[in-house]
Image (cartoon, rainbow, N blue to C red; front, side):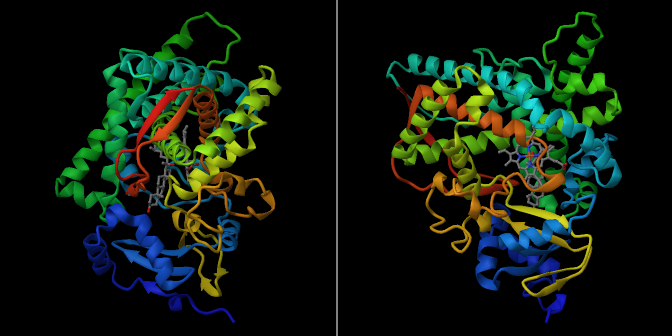
Length: 468
Ligand code: HEM
Ligand code: 2DC
């Protein structure tokens, strides 16, 4: 017998009181740990209301499957009001990230062909490979300049540049120049704005931005400034490409996502601009932090690092210069990236408003409810992943037990649009790093994570990079 909705355990009766308790626990920085505690306390399903935001939370892969079967034809995730409010305030269109309904679907179908379709990998991979080569050349130079035959550093700043250079080269078909000695201050400003934008989003998940705006709150003003910086830089890049397209010189070289969309002429210029800006902004902190966590894990597991190096060497030799073929020969390296996203997912949760009544853990959940899959908590649940605390890329090689477990990029038609770019960019990065350097770590201290809208390291990760 299915039990009624109101019997689901949890704290959902007083949103304001829960928000206060949440704030007192430093919940803004610890959302992911609080979710783990809640699953420990209430079991595999709980209901929660913090501020105005009311949801049912689940953790099991079979329940994730039920959730995604009920997402409907226009899957809708939690609306980040801060992001839509900024666009409303500045009179800018929503891109694919923020659109919903038929408007989302029609844009997404066109973007899929240019951004996530496997056919595009042949165009993207050579561009991303070149950025990877430039990155290792830059690191070699840093090592040389140190005069110590090694470089000990917090690599995050270099990784942000690598990520922006990578997504920029795919979107615009040309280089932004972030891996050179002189770096355009505007590009560095763009990177800083993304970090500020994420950070200032958090309070507005629980307190309506319209209210904060009326109060003239600093967090709203900072948020506006951050998006202004992001849109300003993206507009400059987009204008530059649009101008070049008007010149007659044509070649058969792949021109990048933006030029392809402009020439295709199926989306309005404003729709193209909105989604390309989101792709550019979405492509920086996500891949760079995932790569940073991966290097951290490889530094902590030297034997695994050697195993991956051997896999890459074999793949390189057997593929005989064919990039796409090489990328098919590195299952353990792909397992490592999945393992990183299991322990350090970018998104603490995946969410959908369900479009039909469902039963989860024997509770009735009515259509229209916001259901969240606790991705961070699932990755550390011992009943889902045996010995969850261990970084074991090989666990992903046995594909028969991976049912609804590899969800780092989300699921279905609303999954991450940048997924193929991100995966290829990260695979090529690790290939080049493993072929050139050994990565080491000073002491065995566990780096904790903190919630800055995405999950990031709480303290800097200091690595030592040595040439092979
Ligand atoms: C959406 C994760 C990199 C652009 C998402 C979602 C997740 C995610 C979990 C929500 C999916 C869902 O609701 O099912 C990641 C991870 C990344 C990454 C783990 C890298 C490690 C990127 C990159 C870009 C990007 C590089 C841009 C090039 C987007 C966009 C959406 C999205 C535009 C919204 C798609 C839509 O609503 O239709 N991402 N992402 N992401 N991501 Fe990513
Ligand atoms: C944050 O409770 C926690 O990929 C909230 O590239 C629920 C929530 C909703 C949407 C999620 C967000 C969380 C984390 C960051 C995500 C976002 C959807 C897309 C976004 C996962 C889990 C991200 C990082 C995009 C960002 C693109 C943007 C910069 C233009």
